[in-house]
Length: 74
Image (cartoon, rainbow, N blue to C red; front, side):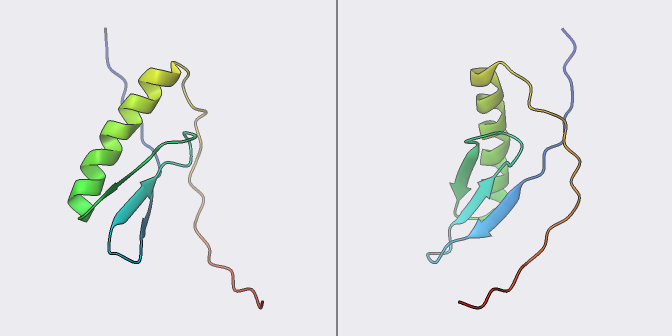
């Protein structure tokens, strides 16, 4: 069986404790965390594989368009 290579956009944030949190917007519920960028990137690859194997359904192919910050007065 031939393996396919897919690219996924990963959103990485850092919490107040310095832990990196990675989320994959194309796959619902797919996220992980790590103490370093290297660790979180290794873990997010594993998380993507686990999520796709568990779901058995391929996520829709999305094209990353951009990232914006919005300022809101509260």
